[in-house]
Image (tube, rainbow, N blue to C red; front, side, top):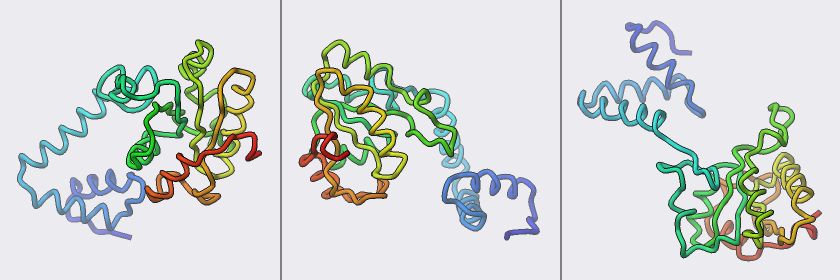
Length: 205
């Protein structure tokens, strides 16, 4: 463990960086020392960018992803198939699927998955706007693209039960994504094939 800081300011900055996921005290110290070696203007811009991000970032009122505007660029794109909705846990998973260039529908970001251990239940998921689209007949197919973990499968099943009585096709990723894998760590080719070769959800139960 890092001890004996010669500066309380340095120690405080290291403590803040160490709060980030995957960043230990040693890595945090390297990052802070790196910033101290940069031009004051560059570090100021870095800090202001983060502050602006936190203060001004929005969530799309249609799909719930991170956006600069009330409606994100994907939901605003009229060339995309708005009858096809890919349901993901978070914006990171949405970006992973976009990087495959194999999908031309829109998305719905749940903002989490059902996980009793973490205190996340069905009522904590962001599904209202998706439910409205289904009721209005806008959506023809839902792709359940959640990580193949116990929590992901539980959430898939919950959504399937909620939507199965509506005239909407419910599919899931082909099992090219290994069971237990987090979606963001799947390579683009495997993930792309899993979308193209998706299967009916009921056949995977």
